[in-house]
Image 1 (cartoon, rainbow, N blue to C red):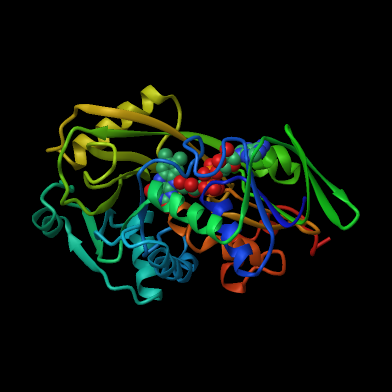
Image 2 (image 1 turned 90 degrees about the horizontal axis):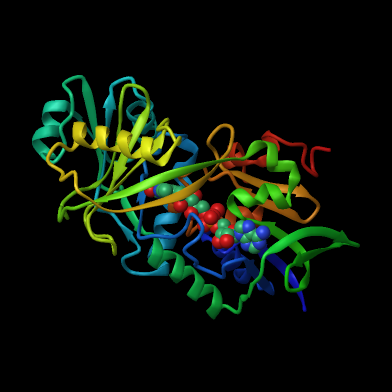
Length: 358
Ligand SMILES: Cc1cc2nc3c(=O)[nH]c(=O)nc-3n(C[C@H](O)[C@H](O)[C@H](O)COP(=O)(O)OP(=O)(O)OC[C@H]3O[C@@H](n4cnc5c(N)ncnc54)[C@H](O)[C@@H]3O)c2cc1C
């Protein structure tokens, strides 16, 4: 059967793109080795942090605002504005970047001295020279439920799904043939949203993608009153975490940004040190652990855009892409035509010569 659009990868990015295709009336097929909404990719497990005052780049904020509205249309409790609490030395990227985004986009926020932060958020213990930052619209997305919700909506809208491992792509006239282990498929347009595996199918992006394996641990705790949080230390390592509302029991924490992704044992030691320092009352007992891969771009920003006529990649989400899941499919889909100027910093053409620039 022939499709208007084939998407390789049924994580949050691929599913969101499928939904965007159906809104434009297209016949869409999504192919994934493990099937849709699987627990093998980066889009699995219970919660993902939602930050609005985005320290990485103020240009993400308009997308995040749209993402909030879109999450609401996909389900009642998928986006949970439990509050976002961020902290670090005054000169840290997290504090300076969050503040810059908040100022540029007029986001309601509060700056707190370490003493004010320790008084108002007594679960945390900030050193005296740290600054706290709070935004009411931060929090988390219930990612396992959210991925399933997008999958359901895409199915209702008529998207077809195939469980198959894609081995290669080749142009056939003005269309693309997608070779799977089980079958071959044909489409006018193809999006590859296969996380780290994107480079195996689209060699142009391979030199610009690296894999980092990150550890998540669940501490024995019933702290439901935590906001979504991120605390950056003096060397840029960020401890982040969630209240105890996950489907997995306990308080989940992980390491981000300049946090070392070396061995799992080293990560566990690093997380324990940061947790003991910034959340001294949290039980050190670990109930469960999980590792999950980041697909990292050279500058930490997403890589979206057309690399050959009618072939788009969406990868390099660098460990912070989930929160955009409700809206990112529109950006990916539009990139067949052009990437909006406001998010041109996500255009894959910043690394490779694309169809338009050659
Ligand atoms: C530990 C961890 C913590 C994170 N925390 C946050 C957070 O707090 N907030 C946030 O916003 N983001 C967070 N992220 C990032 C976010 O989860 C990812 O950016 C997002 O899920 C990426 O989605 P994706 O669809 O690109 O990739 P994936 O979900 O990995 O989907 C890719 C899919 O492609 C399929 N595939 C691969 N190769 C093939 C092939 N050859 N043929 C067919 N199918 C194939 C895979 O089976 C997979 O299902 C975190 C990520 C990790 C790993």
